[in-house]
Amino acid sequence: MQLEGSLSQFPLRELIEMAVYSSVSGVLEVQVGDDVGRIFFRDGLPQHAELSGLQGVDAIGRMFAERDASFRFSADGAPVTPTLWMDPWEIIELAEHQAQTWALVRPYVPALSAIPTLRMPLQRAQSLVGEDIAPLLTLIDGQRSIPDIARDLSVTLIDVYVGIASLVQQQIVVLASPSPSPTAPPPEPNSDTGEKRDGFFERLLARALEEERRKSEPRISEPRISEPRQSEPRQSEPRRSGGRSSRE
Image (cartoon, rainbow, N blue to C red; front, top):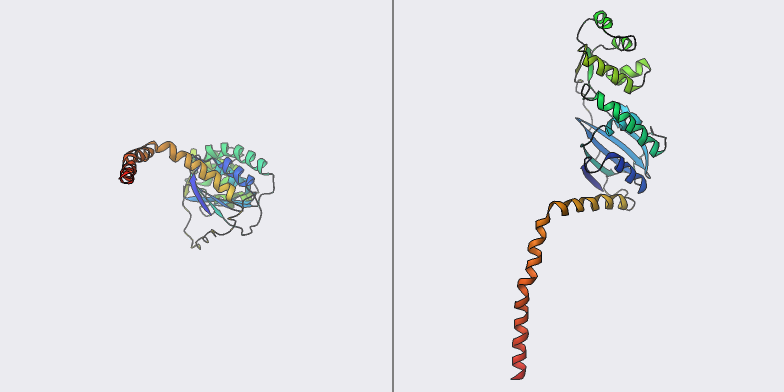
């Protein structure tokens, strides 16, 4: 089973709730710029989330910052290494809270995989920032990614993104695209897996899509109504001729 749509029609919160209610097993993919975020479900419970170096609630929080991104759900029962252990409703609440911060970061750090590079000598950059951001500057070398910097500083990833966004805003740092590396294409989703268990989830989306089609296509029903009316007199003619032959 594979379903596609837009978050403008089905908000991410509703998609997660429907997956939980239907005890679905599969992968929900959300297009975030040039990246793809993935939330893995097992029997309706979120097990793992990833998005360009982000994992767990951090990844879901970044996805929640998108309002009209496209999504795709594919049934898949393959096991994953868990990064989510909280109650689904707690995950949603934390992710929605983080989304407010991501919405502020996104204009300055649109690509999560970007590599920060100093636009000036380190000493001059250090003189322009406060003590809270200064430790970031020592690790910005044009090689480390933002997740790498967060790991080396033992700081939460979203805090590092906020710091990098501030440096970009002050024109102290510029972001570069990472060097391309060969990656294997993702495996094709198995459409046969979980068909019996995903019926409720599929029906909810299909029903909403059908309602949208009916609202947007009101003229389609007009010719269908007029067709039976045109055929009625033709059906009555043979009945009259049959009566005459019996009287003769």
